[in-house]
Image 1 (spheres, helix red, strand yellow):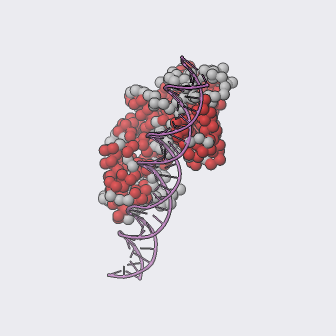
Image 2: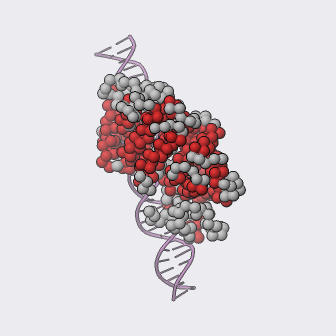
Image 3: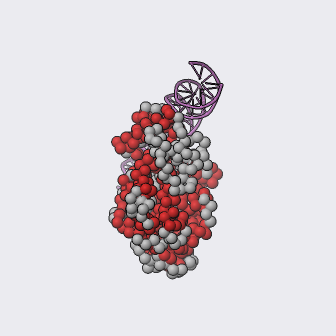
Length: 226
Length: 226
DNA sequence: CACCTAAACGGACCGTGGTCCACTTATGGC
DNA sequence: GCCATAAGTGGACCACGGTCCGTTTAGGTG
């Protein structure tokens, strides 16, 4: 499983150097980050990681994802190209890291935020609120998301993706939804997958409301009432 | 919309040079191949197209998709590299053309084959039979399919994909399924999308039967009874 | 058959993702 | 503080996807 020395690219949570040991959230999934921990980068490596993510984020805002080359990121961060690859494995890894970083707000919202998404609401309520929230999030970051989807299988090992999956699966189980929770979770998430939502709304003019209706409808048909 | 002079890559059906004008199937979708027709290649171009597809297919069988380079295909077909790009636009276009070619049997089965998939069965029956058939097909060609999924949005403009979508939408309408047929069609197809099926069966050991159950269950919950 | 034009051709050329390896540096043990 | 060693670094290097443009050719017209 471990790909021989690429600490990043599907482990490191947010920003290692500053901040305390990080309160243990994201522990919903059994296989999420249990295997290897924060991976303790050497001081210089951690510093460079932040420099690189910052530079990439800046370049992304300025030039768009298409023009984000590994060399330009390296240059903007003031490091060598090899360093970028060592840290993030490949271009997709860098994009995923960027994305994971941006996902933290959404994660906070459904892991520990207020109702209806947070843990103080009943499971059914949380499920109904989850879909629209994800769609909003995807809408905000669609460029980055689309750009990070070069390898179709890799999607399933993206930390944020796995967290969503185990979260929905858990809620479905709690809400006593019909059918197999894991399968249904995949179907539900598939119905609001970023490329699909982008295609339907942007390229075919479907209003987002209709997609949200679809989400609620699907839940209800599996016995998850509002 | 038309990308300025790339006839192939999402139009030409199978093999232009031999065979009669092609009985008009694939006309289910209003926007499928209506815009430009068979595109009448010049004789030399048509011959080279076949040479290229043959060469690519051979190389694919021999070396696998990962090692299929545009230059090797060109060399194996005895043409220049530029010719490959002119015909298929890019690597993904070549892979899609290859895939579309291989999809013809499946298409024949659900467009004009015998029951339960073909037009002589009731819509509900056809729908239930469709999912498992698609999964079998995807299983047989998963390497090529996965390799062709580099651009997440492009999937929606692949002819075979569009045909499946309009087919399922039509059947759902005929079977008086609940909800919006187009949205449900996307959800259904998403639940048996090749990367997902591959992930669940090959990487997580889920038996295919369970996925088939999921397909039937989903249909039933939208009122499409066996 | 000669000629004309649009289409097709091919390979030199370029940029970028990704690898490799000789060199540098952080860090923990003594 | 010094050393050993594992980790990190950087840029030369390579291969492949994709573009460009001068040349060739199919095939219609007189």
